[in-house]
Length: 231
Image (cartoon, rainbow, N blue to C red; front, side):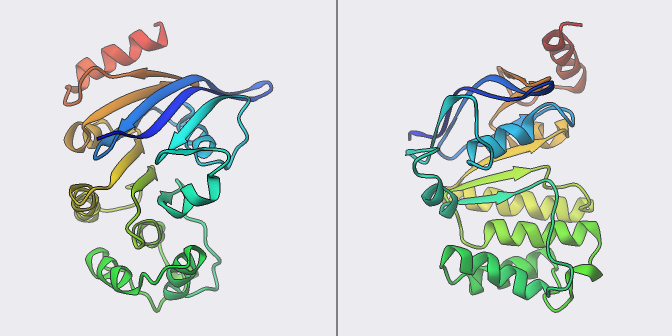
């Protein structure tokens, strides 16, 4: 198995505001890679940079064997990306949002979407404005999963989900990974990484440090985190 993601020396500067600095990591095929760190640490900036939504200052990205800049459109067709904020047009019905997300990729995802909506208990006839934050998150999950991508990129996916739905979400992720997919999971919830991820890294003030192992206790994690912060 090769690497699905290869990020080398990625740097994105916002001038006076902190971006990311010299970020490098790889994700092998079939991995669930935990991307830990507090809000504002640089996780979302790294993700948006690697998917081509932000123009980086320096560094290189290879996603699914393709150049992160030259092959951006083809990469996005094969990635299931779920941003941290689930923004949709309020007046649209859920079923139309899900269909639109499939049409953008030119793929008929109706059967998979139906199964996902059933598992996640998504009411496809409601309008977006009628949904709670958690239910909007579930719509976003369906949009990211329905085309059965080779790579999932989830940015804080479980916020707003109740414990049962969180378990259902990870059951779905594990099922897709067993069928050959790979997953990057950005989160600030250590228990999610400990329970579901094979490898992990920590972002702190725009810089990344790899964890030597996953499955550490909270005290060990906090000690490591403080060491990386230089405290």
